[in-house]
Amino acid sequence: MATLSVAVFVGSLREASINRRLALAVQCLAPEDLSFEFIALDGLPLYNQDFDSDYPPACRALKQQVEAADALLFVTPEYNRSIPGVLKNALDIASRPWGTNSFAGKPGGVIGASIGSTGSALAQQHLRNVLTYLDVAVLAQPEVFVQFKNDELIDAQGQIASDDTRKFLQGYVDRYAAWVRAHTSR
Image (cartoon, rainbow, N blue to C red):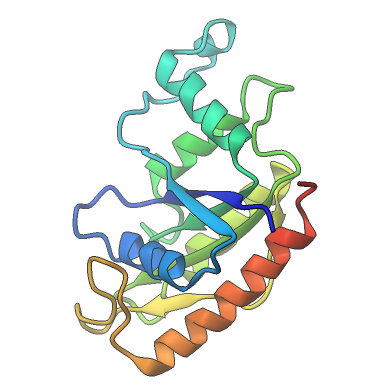
């Protein structure tokens, strides 16, 4: 079976990001035929339509990373009941200029973590709306809203302390992997 590449967008720049930990946990649970490339969002300039005639190198590199990927995984925190600006900026950059949407037709997944009881549910809904417009085939179920009640739930290497959380995330990863395989042409 061919290896399928997954571009991972973590919507938090924080060094100790719980969403980065969640993304690493998914990577640890994933089957061998999926490989994960974490996309750096911290060096991107703010999108400006003036770029459309001559994209900056960092923006061209982002578009190339997305285009090279077979699938997408978005792992988002919730900031003020929506997605973080850094993630929206990356979406804007890679989907522009008009007619060169790098996301179009790719399968994707949306998950997230928060210390709050809603576990990024509203941010994920906003993100799903944007991704649908960008022609990303987003896995609808199961939804993953992880509440980090304590800092030990998932460690910095993606190891999961809770058997229930591991079992739940494994169910998601299995469905996501099947979704990616069903929606890729390679």
